[in-house]
Image (cartoon, rainbow, N blue to C red; front, side):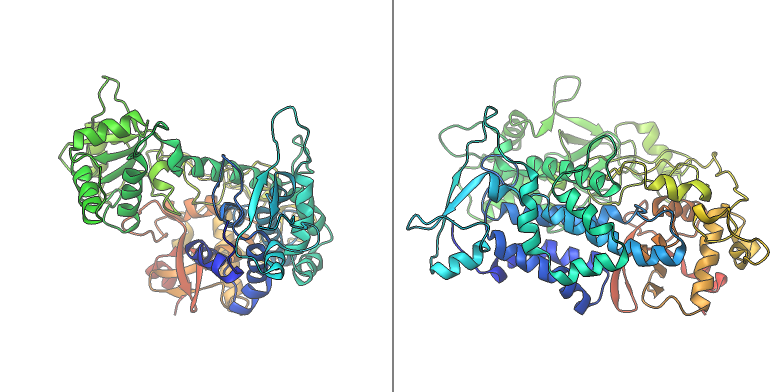
Length: 564
């Protein structure tokens, strides 16, 4: 393995680090203090070590990539989890960002037991890396060597090896004192909980919400890596393997924007039944790309390519025994011949966010119903599709009925899940809950004094708020109250799409963000991108800072008083 300085290791994951920078939503100084230092320490500490010998994230830089992915997706997943459900509003504002930061740290560090328990790292002269004394990068630089070697420790079932507890050693080296103090100032429970999650100390009978997030994200990240790993496809034989080159061509065509998904003239269509690729047009575009790059030995016939990828189990057979499916894209009267991916992650693994489902694609009736919708998307009276193959949305942990006396408490008790979207059924109106008159946490509702509390829901004009349930009206009332009091600065504001409200600020009201976004969309207030009409959470610029937010349509924001 070649030794690279930390800044060069960081450059290998520039795209993922850029996404992380946007997801944190903090200023440059704060980002460097809390996030940048940890990431640089990780790059120096593990350098380009692989995560496993033959499993997930193998190869140079695998452990660094695995840690970054676990941290990034855990941070995203934590946005819809309320950790301090029983605290008051002001207390939650203090605690929730710290719990989310601790979740990111736990994701970053939970796999750091691997260099200690599964491998021995040596220099060319045979000296062994003193794991407990120096970070790997410092040791290699001290020795002045350019290469190092890995000997894997026997992990056969009969061998009893130490477990995840060893991660605490390297985690302590990565996490600076200033970060630990930042967490401790919020609550005495945060740092011990984080260490327990990193070391796997929580029992399966009653895991902490942070532990549930990490475990679910780990499963998804590993499954995604297995789906995109070239070794997964084809049979190991002597000679050239064409499957990895064909898969790589597909992923690059998608990442470059030459292939689109679920828009007019798309090559890829993603619906309730899975992911489809228009064939043989797509095959010809793959061949053109490989031909221009001088790739030799690739079959030039689309049918041969189809047979190769089908043999490698990239494509799924039709029930009639063949590999061609007929799809009916929305807003189109044409039927198209396509092949179906056995696992959408085979292609979507090249993206950070998979697209929304286009509904039913293999039935003319469903497709026509979708095209008759005046908005060009499926009616909200039809259940929205779920996609278990993506890592794009924070998990929904709140209750199905948005009763404020239960939502925040249950949110901290239900297990987190990644990606599936909630079904939207317009016929099932949320039950009104008269107990919620303010943004006081549910656990405080018995103690509050109604005579002195302000009914925040009254701040929303009746003619605007009639389409909302009680909890959603209360949240908008609280937003207006904070806006007028000058408590909202960089967390919400006007953007080119409308009026954006940052997810971190929304979470401070003790609500489930997914449920809130669904309610706002149902009222017709929510802005969604034209190419992704079901995408409720988007990245926008709020007062010059990139944040993930929900966006209220501009004319609604003006009528409500958010925008002058």
